[in-house]
Length: 239
Image 1 (cartoon, one colour):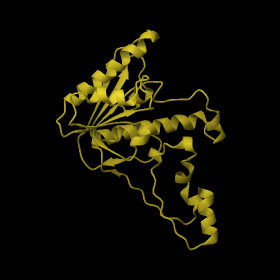
Image 2: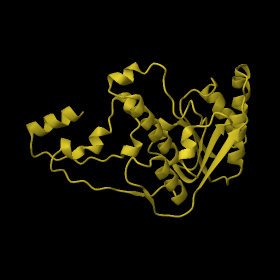
Image 3: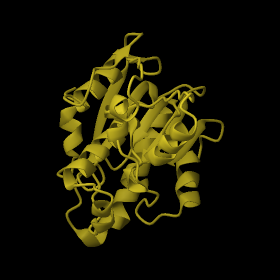
Image 4: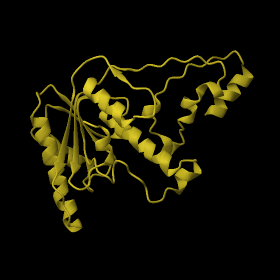
């Protein structure tokens, strides 16, 4: 895409571009995107002026600060324009028997999700965010039916983090916040290396993805994890 833009400039030097981006929300490396173009924009477009927008108008202070802690060392801190906010961590009991994991854990997660929803007024909007489309091999329709039972009039959306980027909800519930989902590394990472993505870059993108999940919330974040399997990103929130 950069080559395409440079070709346009060569054909018409008077052309001007307005580019908007957030390197903390760059989560499409699997499709070839690269934060280098954001971080060194002026080297690709000499003479370009830029403005940094640091205020988060969606999330309250506690959530914004947790996001800053998660992304510490990777850019300027975001700021919130309102106080408050909550982040809760729910730890489900460990299931050590692999043969029982796919039998017991779905119910544990669904019960936890339903328990959270029941605590809020009916006009509260919810986003239930997953790392991948697969949730213990439960078909999406069945999962949604089980979660929505008794909550038909509630605003509840179930989505992957990637799909929910750019959107928001009053309460965000992130499920499977475990060491094998956040971060998620595919066993065959050769195609990523073709694109120049090292394991270090992939880990940073997974961190950004978790940042996106947490900062979808307008009021409260609930993270559901498992005993003995907690995501390393949880401690980086430094709650």
